Image (tube, rainbow, N blue to C red):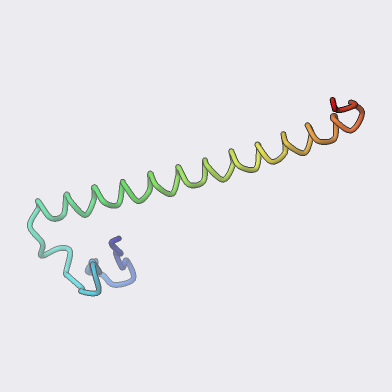
Length: 75
């Protein structure tokens, strides 16, 4: 993944352990960096969605377990 440091007045791109002055990169590379940032944001959003779904499923399983306590299982 890429990391941009916004602490400095000049943004720094850290990629695979190396640092680059983002302002001095060609536009093509800046677009790639932006695309990776979008991809990273989408991944985080979908990971959060998966967490919410997992919690919802766990809650449904607990409710099912509670309701099944009153039902006799078949042999």
